[in-house]
Amino acid sequence: LNISDDELRGLFPITKELVYFDHASTGPMPSSTRTAVETCLDTYSRQAQFDFNVYFSKLARARLLVAKLIGADPEEITFTQNTSEGVYIALINIPMQEGDKVIVMDEVFPTVRYVADHNIPHAQKIYLKFCRKDPVAVLRNNLDKKVKAVVIDHVQFFTGEVIDLPRLSNFLMENEVKLVIDGIQAIGALNMSVKDINIDFLAVGASKWLFGPNGVGFLYVNKKNFKSLNRLHTGWLGASWKNFEDFELNPPLFDDARMFEQGTRNVIGIISLMENCRLLQSYGMDNVEKRILGIKTRLIEGFKELSYDILTPLTGRQSGIVTARPKKDATSVYNLLQSNKIVVSLRNRALRFSPHFYNNEEEANKILEVLRL
Ligand SMILES: Cc1ncc(COP(=O)(O)O)c(C=O)c1O
Image 1 (cartoon, rainbow, N blue to C red):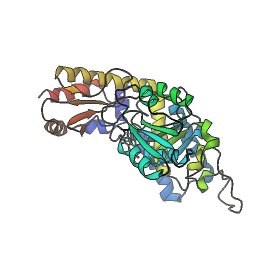
Image 2 (tube, protein in one colour):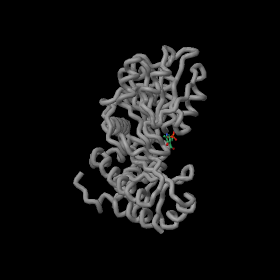
Image 3 (tube, rainbow, N blue to C red):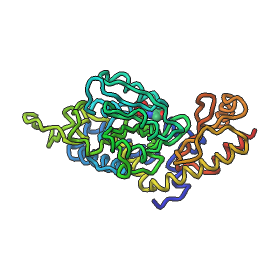
Image 4 (cartoon, rainbow, N blue to C red):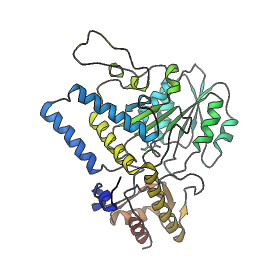
């Protein structure tokens, strides 16, 4: 995308109001996406519905752009409401018998914990710590024939630690164990392709690094699993309708990830997600990641000068998150940032900073200036 920094920042009106370094919580909607949503609302208010062909071509385009973002094929993508729904679809569709086991990363955000604890009662849940450990070593001691799946947050929500998926996924594939990933803190910030890693399911909500809005997301299902899925959480729009005029003949469910779109979809959400993916891809995910890491590096230098306790591991692959604990009481520092129109997260007496590609070093410097006060 041939776009100047000013033009890029112009797409994010939030930059006029705030220094917004809180994408690990919620991402702001770009103005280009807002325009697309307004066009969609216009259709709804003037003619109630999209023309059948327009509707399905938009859906196909959205699926293609989401697939391209992660290096998947379109039929490996199903639209969801959020990360939870994606993890849910994954876990109920992995064939398991009474007494089979699911290993869950203990440091997950509550999303995975709630889904795993309450929706697969036949499976035994085993929680293991993965942070700052070699994931293969953790698993080697706990794997047996009853383990059917491992569920991991790719990026840990508090410290931003990136779990080494390539190593983990190869080990699991050799042992025929399914790998389910919560990717919400990675996708949209990090350049990654599911073709390079043996992930079975990747659940992503759009609300953070994909610029929202709330209530839309997607699940990637590796096509090698299509034949063995339990085919649960399916519905009439998980089938290949040719039109909406003849309901005598019910078409069969798709044989791929699209089978999971149960009924009437969140079209406004999907159109937003499509526009956000288009923007990220036209800038290039490699460039997006580079920009984020550049700003993060500047913050880290500043935190070191301030003798902050940096809670983010600084070796290994980096995410868009850096978390640090100030010398002073974190709440008062957080309030000071707020009063200077700087938005970050306050978590466990530490500050979590999560810049995106439209942020810049000037903003990072402004944050550091306030922190020096
Ligand atoms: C790692 C992680 N997973 C999931 C979520 C949210 O889950 P959902 O999209 O289901 O609301 C968050 C943050 O809110 C998160 O940090």
